[in-house]
Length: 272
Picture (cartoon, helix red, strand yellow):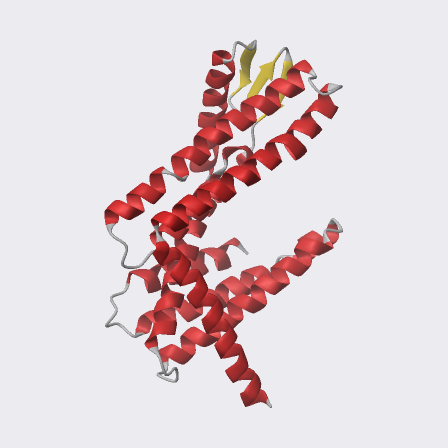
C-alpha cells in the first residue's frame, strides 16, 4: 500500500519538474494519478472495519476523481485535447499533490522525521506553557505533564497536514514571482506552526487543570470544540491571505473545476 503511494508521488513529482517541451510529463502525471487512485481504492476496508463509512466513501470518491484526472492527462499527452491549457492546469495540480504528499508522508512514514517533529513540538509546547506560567514538565521524548497529568504528543498534534497542504498549494502557483510565493509561505506555514503550539499548550493546560470539568471533559471540550473552532477560523483567514497574495492559485482552482466539468460532459457524450 505504501509502495503504491510513493510510486504515485514519484511520478507526480517527475511530471511537475519536467520542462514544458517534454510531452511525456503528461504520461508521468497520468500514471501518478492512476497509482494514487489505486492507493485510495485500497483504503476503504480499513475504515469499514472501524465502521467509519463516511471516510470509506470519501476515499472511494477520491479514487474516482484521481482516475478522471489521469484520463484527462493521458488525453492531453496523446494530443487528443484541443487545448494544452487544461494540461498545464493539471500539471500545477500534480505539483501541489506531489509536494503536499511528499512532505506529509515523509513525516508520517519515515521514523527519523516522524520522531523528530514530534519531539520538536513537545519541547516547544513545554516552552510555551512555561511562558504562560503553568507547571509543566517533560516526562518522555513525546510526553509532557501539566499539573502532574501527562499528555502524549502525536503526529496530528504537529499541524504537519496543514503545513504540507499550504506548501503544496503555494508551490503550484505557476508564473508567480518568487517574492510573492515567499510572502504567501511566510503568512501561512510559520503562522500555522506557531498557532498550533498555542493550541497544544492550551489543550494540555485545560486537561491538566480541569478547566471545563474533569480532566477528560476538559480535554474533550478544549480539543474538539474550542481549539477546533479556532483552528478553522485561522485556516480560513490564512487561506484568504494566501489567495490574495497568489491569485494564480485561485486561477488554478477555478481552471481545475472548469476543466473537469468540460471533460466530464465530453466523456458523457462519447458514452451516449
